[in-house]
Amino acid sequence: MKLGIIGLEQSGKTTVFNALTGADKEVGTFGRIEAHISMVKVPDERLNWLTQLYKPKKTIYADIEFVDIPGSINDSSDAKIIAAAHEVDALVFVVRAFENPHVPHPLGGNDTLRDFGQIKLGLIVADMSISEKRIEKLRKSIDKGAGTQEEKLELSVLEKIMEKLENERPASETKLSEQEEKAIRSFQFLTLKPYLTLLNVSDNALHTEQTAGSVSQLPNCMAMCANIEMEIRRLDKNDRKVFLDDLGIKELSLNSFIRNAYKTLGLISFFTVGEDEVRAWTINAGMTAAAAAGKIHSDMERGFIRAEVFSYEDLKTAGSEREVRNAGHFRLEGKDYIVKDGDIISIRFA
Image 1: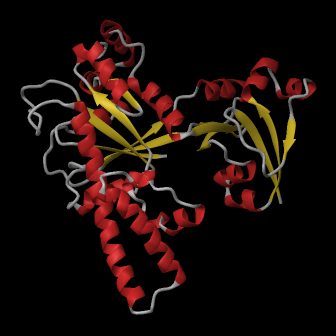
Image 2 (image 1 turned 90 degrees about the vertical axis):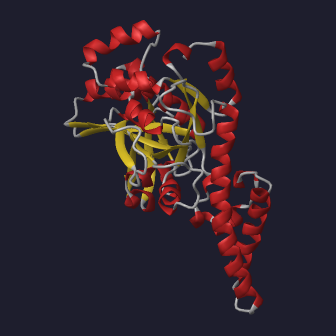
């Protein structure tokens, strides 16, 4: 999973990036044109327990790739910014709520709802620019009698989307059939991407009613003090707890952010286990066993025969695979079985 961090100038995007990933990128660098990228392992106590049980040669955690997209998303004329945003699976809106007289807000002062709206507007403008160019090209082709049926369908879908965008509404509000969605999938419209919101607050505002009110007003939102967490990340692990306790924070925001991301984006985890490797896999909720097998290897999906399945909870209760079988919790499932969070799966394929 690849998450792109976006926001207005001076919102603390790179500070958030450092706080979540443990990176040490320079903050406040104006004119930066290259994205910062960092991989983070997804913490999972279930995987830790499975590792203790199976004692494999290696343990592989699921991971998230964070991309700190440079500049302001409102600058839709910057092709590099827009291109970087197109390449991610989901977006993280960083909304400024911290006070810092040395880092003035570019719009004159904090207003979380206004800034959130400005970010969404930047995405809409970027999508409009792509749509307009393609619509113009398709109309010329169709008017000359050279348009294919696929191009006519594409034009119809783009015009539907354009109607929403012109009214400052995201493309995600357009009702599309499966065929219509497929026709415009390659455009990777920004307003079709799922998103989370991070409210970047001052350290003394983390637990205030104002912050709680702002979090409740913004979709898929959680608050963090990125500057403090970035500094804590630089400390020795043994010293971190003291600072977290002083701030009244149970844990760094990464864990809660990942939980929120999985819930908001509709993601679950399944596991493969054995003496060689214990591994967590991230898939979309509702995915079939055959499609999940394809995440492991395309040959498994093509040659899928059956899936041997039992749950992590049943294994933990029983204590061993043998006892899971004895308790009748070991199952054979077909290709249409819907994988559940925490399933432990072994794929049989031809």
